[in-house]
Amino acid sequence: MTDTTAQPAGGTARIPGSKSITNRALLLAAAARGTSRLRFPLVSTDTVAFRTALADLGFRVGAADHDEVWEVTGAGRGPTGRTDVWCEDAGTAARFLPPFAAVGHGRFVFDGSAQLRARPLRPLADTLAALGAAVTTDPSGGLPMTVETEGLDGGAITVDSSLSSQFLSGLLMAAPLMRTPVALTVDGLVSRPYIAMTLALMRRFGAKVTEPRGDVIQVEPGGYGAVDLTVEPDASTASYVFAAAAVTGVTVTVPGLGRGSLQGDLRFADVLRRLGARVEVTEAGTSVTGKGRLRGGFSVDMGEISDTFMTLAAVAPLADAPISIRGIAHARLKESDRLAAVAQNLRALGVDTDEGHDWITVHPGTPTGARIACRRDHRIGMAFSVLGLRVPGITLDDPSCVGKTFPGFHEELRRLFPAISQPTSPQRQGSR
Ligand SMILES: O=C(O)C1=C[C@@H](OP(=O)(O)O)[C@@H](O)[C@H](O)C1
Ligand SMILES: C=C(OP(=O)(O)O)C(=O)O
Image (cartoon, rainbow, N blue to C red; front, side):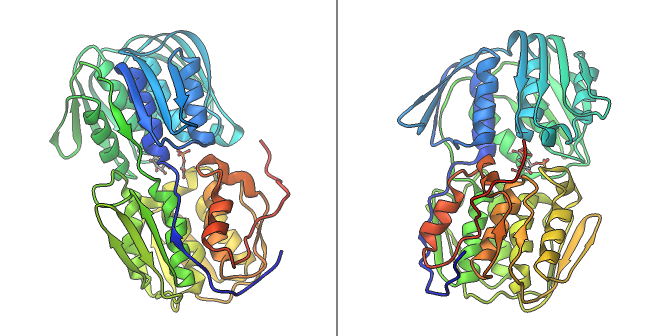
């Protein structure tokens, strides 16, 4: 590992497509009548797992132009038959595919990695059972999950969305394929902007959805029609290069991610403004210009944009006063217990950190180098890599964990900041 302090470059970042849009669009296209085209989909472990799962369920997904276009032949219905479905590490696969299977006919067994098996599913299993499917899960309430079904009728149902919004997104996307209208009452929603994304994409594929009351969403039967959709760059991924601009004092621009974005995580821009960076969000894209110095002394609720809390927490020691992040209890239920992972790594760097069930406070400090324990969590690896642009001697125990959403992350950070050492290590120590 070499450390240098030469001037960083910045510039226009090449951020791959949104994971959340890609996997929703894959499912909606498979459910639709006709052939859909997805332009600039994300190609990563999570999305390849999702498209492979759809192929295993009997849907044709072709790739053209070096994966710049994915073409999905929809069936206008759910899957049929008896199929084992591998969800790998993808929360979206484990939460979106079982409801889709439940509106089909047959017997479907979902499973995934040990990491995914540890994540909650019970509220989804309970709701599918209440709608008429025969559902079994592991006694822990997680994967493996078996769904036996002859389609679903619909009706009025309450969805506990306090652990994850993905349960509700999965049920919503399956709802137009149920035999009668569905009225979903939402109980305790986290990560709300992802529901707005789900509804916007369902409407784009022609679904009839209304929100008669604040906590009720009504979906009519009638299925979906094929579309041609361009996938935006991923806003959660963009948070790393934006934070990198803020801590190094350069400008980074992400074209194609701007006003009108479907992604709530673009609101990380507001957090960057509080840190003192200049942020410009236009129709064409988003630019962040850093001062190199970060302003602290604030507390921010990141419950609706929790995938970006680690980006802030990792650079927070560079600020001139403490930063508190709250409302993020559900971040303990992701690829890792992210609050614990962030606190552990900051302390390993010598940074004073306080932590509670749903909050973390990071104090200003002078981090020393250390080996970051990634816990097979892509966002831990990417967030601490940003701090590595300013702190010599940071290495990752598992650089390839970034492949879940951005396989080319290290190369892109090196291209944008060529003069600065990168916190990678050739050894991969994560286990599958
Ligand atoms: O619906 C989605 O695409 C996502 C919803 C969020 O999860 P939760 O709703 O579990 O917080 C987010 O963390 C995840 O990366 C993607
Ligand atoms: C929580 C995440 O992923 P998943 O879709 O597996 O929930 C994430 O990407 O940060």
